[in-house]
Length: 145
Image 1 (cartoon, rainbow, N blue to C red):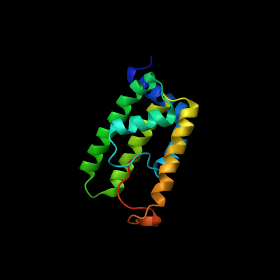
Image 2: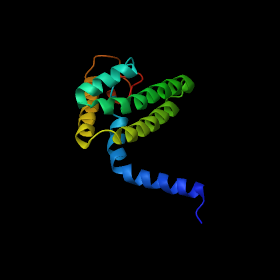
Image 3: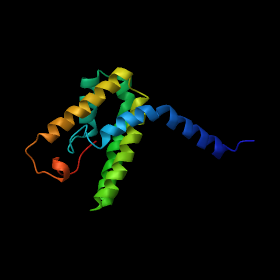
Image 4: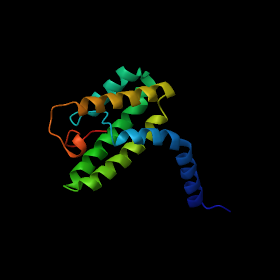
């Protein structure tokens, strides 16, 4: 007989396999493309997503707690990481991957494609800014994914 813990592990493994193609696509963008600026509130992000992705009222309701959770966890990671940028970067990437998987359950294929384009556009505008430069010639500072 399979224990409840084993079932949970199996279910999680199946979810990972199911969403791996989506997460791979989105994760490749995480390290390179900030979706929103550091000063964006959850409401700002939701408004931008609603306008850009043509979200339905139901999708806005379903996405709001995902974005709010991401925002609060992001703030904790930034606060708790101090000057350990490597640790912070890894934690932020993991958080974004989890958030993207949750968004993938709400958004349509077309909306996910547009979400990726939005992230690429933000990356392009970030790269061409006249701000301070960090490693690799990209603008420095923390990024909001």
